[in-house]
Amino acid sequence: MGSNRVFRHGLLASAAVLTLPVAAGAQDTGFDLGEIVVSAGLEATEADRTGSTVDVIDAEALSGAAVRVSDILTAVPGVTVRGNGPMGTTTAVVLRGAPAAYVPVLIDGIEVGDPTAISGDFDFGGMIGADLSRIEVLKGSQSAIYGANAVGGVIDITSFRPTEMGTSQQIRLEFGSNETALASYSLGHKTERAELAFTLSRVTSDGFSALDENDGNFEADGYRATRASLHARYTLDNGTLIGLNAFREVSRGEFDDWVGDVLGTPGDDYTDRKATGVRAFTEFSTGRIDHTLSLTHYRSDRQSTSNGAVSDFDGQRSKAAYKGAMDLGARTRLVFGADSMRESAAGFRSTTISGVFADLAFAATPDLDLDLTYRHDDHSRFGGFDTARLTAVYRPREDLLFRAAIGNGFRAPSIYQLFSIYGDAGLQPEESLTAELGVEKRWGTRASLKATAFYLEADNLIGFDPLAVACGQPWGCYAQVPGVSRRSGVEIEGRLALREGLDLSLAYTYTDSARSGPDWAQVALHDLRVTAEAQLTPLLSGSLAVQHVAGRPTGLEDYTVVDAGMAYDLGTGRSAYLRVENVFDTEYQTVRTYGTADRTVHVGLSATF
Image (tube, rainbow, N blue to C red):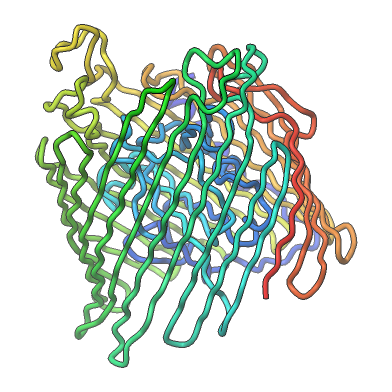
């Protein structure tokens, strides 16, 4: 089925939402315009006043959820996770079929992609969710907002934040299969003028074989990590806000090299990683203009040991940014600014990219919001590139909403692709165009349904060409790959309160990859997840989730995985929980030859006080 045809079918699916009957007894309470999302634009905005699609995982959903963030993200429509084994091994998050290199990841405003990685993307393998308060998944080309690499979308992660005035604390302890143990402690303090949050977490696991055990690999690959994060902000007497975000993570993760470890030689292959991020910022006003200044720095030191050979990968990223914002009348707001970012990797030359941007938000009517963003970037290697994004959201009724967005994006060649022995310093940026149309309908508090049709095309792709000679290597180089890759599909999300205390939710994604190049990660045609949540007694709740993935790339079989959980309210902010992942012990792979976990059981205790 062609991409354009799929996009048209998606529009029909979106339109079909309008024909569904109202749930019996439901009252039209409309949309909550007070819910704020921070990733959809240059400023935080109400979720239902942006034309971009943003999926939010809040603190309640994160509490007691799977240990790894990548496992949590599998519940989001359009997200595909590709993992090379247990916790700590290479794990990529694909968004609407766009590979991880096209999806920047920010933690507390700090971009955390690895400057030394082949494509410069972020590895989710060791990222845990115990110390987080929120994850936002923004979809579509967002280079006009975030600059280079935001071709497929952006994942914005926020660490623990206090929500109530005064001092608050949060503890989570968990033990599970594969000798997995997790401990997390968070301390927060909030006043009218100040906010402070600190989190310390530790996770250890013996894991399982990264290469599939069914192929004769018996050595378990373990992981351990310690992470600390800090958030502080204070408002001075003159109204100026000053703030600091920082984190430090130290980890060791074992892995299997490509030939495996059939005989079992524990500790042969492992990666030691140290990651540090800092962001200092200030916000103040002069006359009609609100100003934001920020400085960020990220450093990743990675040492890989494989069969006695040691390789070091050390990289840094520094960024300075200014943003101004002002109202142009009662219905129009202008945001403008500039930023400059420098990336470096030990042993290679550095790159610098600087940009200027402007965004115009216009409330055309009380029910129609339009937003136009333009950005110009200048790269130290390939020169200038222009990007733009136009979004619209229309609310004809309190219970009905339409969204539309179109934008282009670009991905700059990574340092490795430019300057390694396989690189080509003459590489040009990859280019993209995305579009989406969506509709959301609510029937009071009992039911809601959202359908979105999406389209993505990218050309000037960078891939490894065994026939290329620019780098002087006899076995090939990185080069521009001819042809255009296209992805299109439909996302459907629904929720239904079957009765008081029993909720059913659905997330389905159809992705047509028939016209995508071989260098793009292949994703399944169908991905369906159905979740039931029940309040079994006043103190006991339970959940059951079934995920079915079908129409997978050649060499990977379809699979169905069932997860279950229960939580018991112990009172005074304490709860105990039980989580069983892969209940029926399904054997499947997300990357060929690499294994996934068998049935695992986890018990935990969380407390807030």
